[in-house]
Image (cartoon, rainbow, N blue to C red; front, side, top):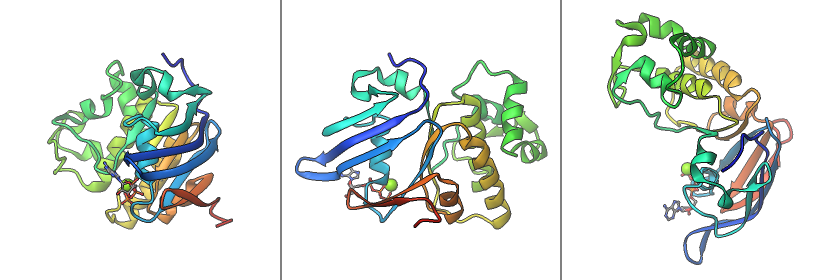
Length: 230
Ligand code: ATP
Ligand code: MG
């Protein structure tokens, strides 16, 4: 079992093949200190999602090492790893139930007050209060009554409440209006604070938030640096 982590992450010459002989990652080395944010950028098929998949241990690496706080993730219980990783995916996962249940998912012990605090911190409280039933409003699985941006803010509130040391964000490519975009950027700042994060980033504004940008190309690191350097 992985003890409570700080969030240091190290990849040492990580190779991964979905299919034998066709490496999707060809020896990635990366040293990420607890609290740092990493933006993964690169063309389609360059290996961004693969890195995230390995971190969450959806697959076992082919060769090399991936450690969290010095623990090889191959050697720890998957649940003890995943319980400390927050994942915000592209297609934000909303299930049938109330808004409150959706935010509380993953922290079932959270009080109503904690749920609302998390929503306020990411500026979701305002739109929630405008819904017919406030926090008790029932939403559908596809979240059709909610806009893309609102769903994103809900998933941020959920992640904030769960308070994981490591955060994984696979940013949606869908375009959103400028006002929502600004809101999301502000919320992202709150969410990233004090956590190690990996963001598959499409928006320049998101990339700007990152301490380090990793440019991937055909499964290799092509360039690294912050926004000013690249
Ligand atoms: P995108 O921007 O399109 O999401 P990506 O950078 O996330 O691309 P990956 O999904 O990591 O790219 O894919 C890296 C390589 O691995 C690609 O060549 C892809 O075809 C291959 N690949 C990805 N998932 C699988 C899979 N489940 N089975 C086999 N090959 C896969
Ligand atoms: Mg991808």
